[in-house]
Figure (tube, rainbow, N blue to C red):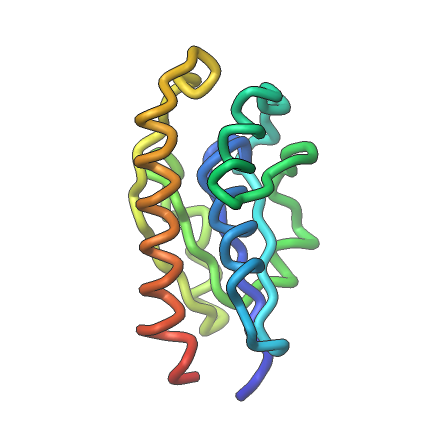
Length: 143
């Protein structure tokens, strides 16, 4: 198996892609698979309340959001757009260079996470966890 570098991308790298990166890295046992995350646009840091809620779910997304860079684009060979508000065209060159792209279309909470809508945040986090579990079963164990 060759090395796989997964880049999870959402709009601001505040929530969806950070959850995907953190949970994937937490459960991934294959040393040849690495994951990072970034936002199409570098977002503002999350509130401590949001970070604490996710930490209580076993997901650590502390730290600052990262923006998409040419360095990350060159590093990755498997991009997963964890968002419904990031255009797939950002990764058109991936296909040209035979890199994989997958789109999950998870809806943005539009800063509701900062307004205390904990149940929607938990639902979104659980959806992402399910997709990560499926990704590992469906694709990565066979590569």
